[in-house]
Image (cartoon, rainbow, N blue to C red):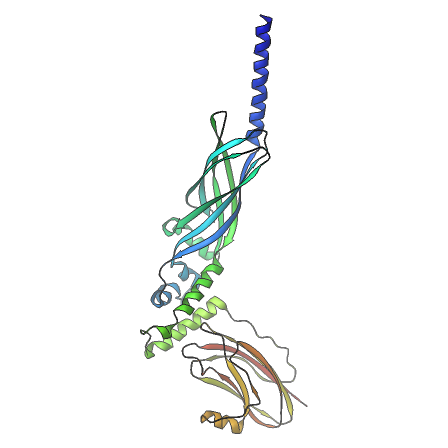
Length: 342
């Protein structure tokens, strides 16, 4: 009788120990969203027609909002860390979770893990998620208002098996990503690839409206780097010029003394930022206008930006901003120059 009692006590002790180990293992299994990797965006077929009519209506609205209309899906990799800080190995078959973007539920995901996590082990689980437009539609306004910031939250349950039982582990974590640069770079790439000179539908009468749109897109997408030169002396020019294709702008100035002329310029455009800037006197300006060879005191190559430092004698002069080499692209050029008598 005493022996049976002893066996019963031993079994009870074993059950208690197993229960303690089970409880410890249960409470020390943790799951978190380690990272969210942006993989790609599924786009509509991008043509000049939808770039101008749908995606880039920047003349009356926000470019990102318009461009977002061209997105069909977003592909992400969810990277989970599963940590087993308990004493027993645990087998995890699946993860199930809700996906929220900026606290708006947009769908449900799951990952077939089918792996055993041993004591002291951390495993990285990668789950591919394709989020289609009809799923993230409720979150579009939020994504647009935050300029592409997506707070990705997963909230769900992992199930693990131990002693033949399925045990649920709830988890919730989040990561923040931005798709702004990806959208911006894609639109830029498509515009460059689909330049209008390659499309027969761009007529002469359409060039001016098209240039207005392109110029607006340029400003919205790329902004304009500020030219801030610390120039001493008499200001000749400190202004911004829009120079249309196959044309030039000129700035007239006079000098009453031999002077050092210092200045610089920056060009911004969608289809190439290059501009040509040169300085010439009255006589050579007349030759330039008549299409003759003209001597210059300074002439840049086709460049995005540049600086000049020349000495000129008293007389009449012109700074020329030339976009004559461009077929379609209007250039926005910041120009600063000042003179100091020697």
